[in-house]
Length: 347
Image 1: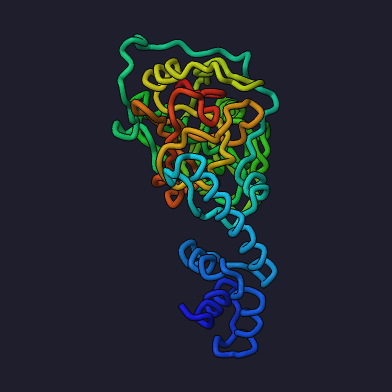
Image 2 (image 1 turned 180 degrees about the horizontal axis):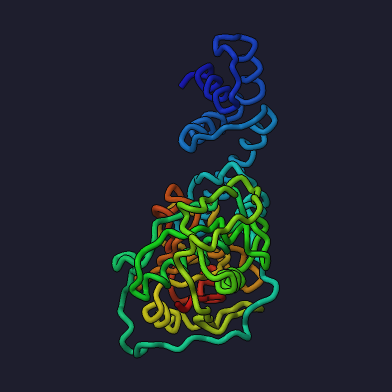
């Protein structure tokens, strides 16, 4: 593609109504951007992910983040044996700090280690060799928290949805917005914990459907609570830990066989993990380069299944991330702290 066409794309990204035939614009863009060897790749990236930027300054900043992401991805793939697990994602124009501050806001204070660990309702020896609760209709569609640190609310909502289905009740798509806006134990887009979200839902008496209380916090702003108890369709009686939580240290002794057993017995589980490397994840099994240390936990998601070699984890970053919204984590070394903090609800 010619330089002038890339300039045109840049102007579209900026939302600027400037003639692409202007030699002055072309000269300026050539001096500022097109001389950069990453410019063409960045323009292709903005088209693929439909990126729009507010100013020339933001455009330049995003391109620098993009360049850093490309370098990081190449390094990560090399370290993983060139299995191409990592690549460019919709988050590649964010710095690592911005990504963490925007998307990874799990609050680790006030741990729930003293709460009970649930009992198995099936014999541990009968654990299936593989399991995918999606195949049994116990997992609702992938959601999108957007530019709001509300992963904890989405993880709790998804786990309540699945807990309701595990009790052979009808499927409801519930409202993460209700928890984000109304749960005063947590911080809305600034983070929280699933177990406190459960506490809110139990105390308030239930949850509305997403259709009745739609998600509006994707821009990072949380409107005042407007929950309507007359529209509650799901209630919970409580919640439990699936494993004894690991709240400090390296967490290398968490029992993943017990995690399999609890997943098979209780259904999909809320898990809080280290998702910092997920900024660059595109496909395949992530089995290295993701610490299990308790201090690294920064994101909450839902564990929905496993194979002989990896866990199947549902994220809340929409279906245009990872494997249709899912990530696969290697089994056996507590990758990303998958077994550090695991909970489920009782109905």
